[in-house]
Image 1 (cartoon, helix red, strand yellow):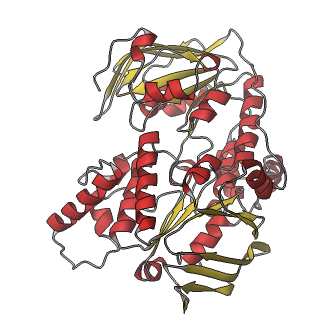
Image 2 (cartoon, rainbow, N blue to C red):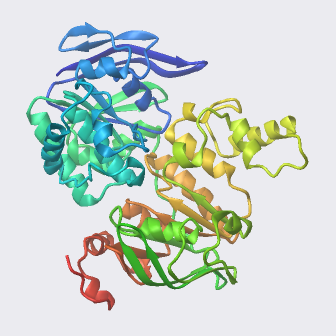
Amino acid sequence: MEVSLIGIHKYFGAVHANEDITLKIPSGSIQGILGENGAGKSTLMKVLSGFIQADKGEILLNGKQVVIESPSDAIQHGIGMLHQDPLDFPPMKVIDNFIIGSRLPLFPKKSVVYREITQLQKQFDFDLDLEAYVESLTVGERQQLEILRLLWLGASVLILDEPTTGISAPQKNKLFETLRLLAGQGKTIIFVSHKLEDVEQLCDRVAVLRQGKLVGVEVPPYNIESLVTLMFGKLVNLADRQDTCTETPILRVEDLALESPRLRIDHVNLEVREGEVIGLAGMEGSGQLLFLQACAGLVRPIHGRILINNKDLTGKRYHVLMKEGVTYLPASRMEEGLVMGLTLNEHFALAGENQGVFIDRQAIQEVTSTRIKEFNIKGTPRSTVESLSGGNQQRALLALMKNQHSLILMEHPTRGLDIESSIWIWSKLKNRCSSGSAIIFISSDLEEILHYSDRILVFFAGKVSPPIPAEATHVDQLGQLIGGKGWDKLGLPDLQL
């Protein structure tokens, strides 16, 4: 299906989020959409998928003008969108999430739905338990659910917003194969991403947005420096590696054993020093999240000890660890990190240490304004958090952190962020390390783990590697370890693959 966006304008108050954007996407092509956070990419895609309406402009499908007033309208026109934060129902089962929103009878034959979804899963090499509750899935698995659901609903135009975030390399490769197959069948794929290597590998052409405007369209062979310059108006380079480690231990994990319904981890030993950054690498569900949550007091160990600042806090809950300087930043910003419907003012009021019974609104306003400026958040104190872009939501989470923390635990700290935002966030985190904080983080981006970590733990099927110095390894070796190969060279027992 050929898609044409003609003269699209969208305002949010005084913000001109999309300014006179005209873009034609041929049928059967894979169109990349690049741009920094807040450039207007998601806004444009939400206009096309019916989540919001343009203030001016037209949408043409196969040369015919259409009016799309809702996501339901969009699906009926064959347009579906996978959002960066999956739109699903966590308290419900996977199978029921497929059925909701479909045009099936009131009492559909689940056996038919099972068969159709199972066939789709095989194309992607996904393995979702259709009877599992969505709240038990990882972020990557929830993205897989959304991809399958849109295809099952009959989308001919598939919009994917950061779809490779949180999934493994093999899953990404399989996804790309499927997208190429779908494009070969005449379906139109719109691929929104900040990962230049993904766009270079997959897309037939790339449109670049900056500050709400379409600033260029590129075709292969791509010049990465040219794309970066179009995105930011300048070249952006990674900062040099910083060594801020001291000899002072912040966290000690001794012979730790953890268990979940899916896997068990045994005999984990680790000492994290002041100023050190530890990266956790592995496929989704390999145990790294379980370990991170245990360090935060969100999961109770079944054996071993967790000591923070030489205090045994094994089995203590998160609010106790918070008093010892531990903070946790989840991957699901809008579900676990921020409160939808509340403004930035209200978030800083909740996060502050108020003295007395009443809130000093003037003081909160001043704190909020200062933090917005300090963390370069594109919003106002009265902005609701859901109105912010993904990058600005992440900046808001960091801004809400208190100044003094011993241990910062993070899930995918730069998930869905552009290069410049990622560099900026890590500069702030490294400043924390210089002040004595230690960091442990999960990332599916091996380059990020290698560049910002001092040491790395690799997880595979509940097995945990000894700490690996980041400067002593490389992407290929980490990729092999994540896939279960090369563990014998680390002095560990052979793994059953």
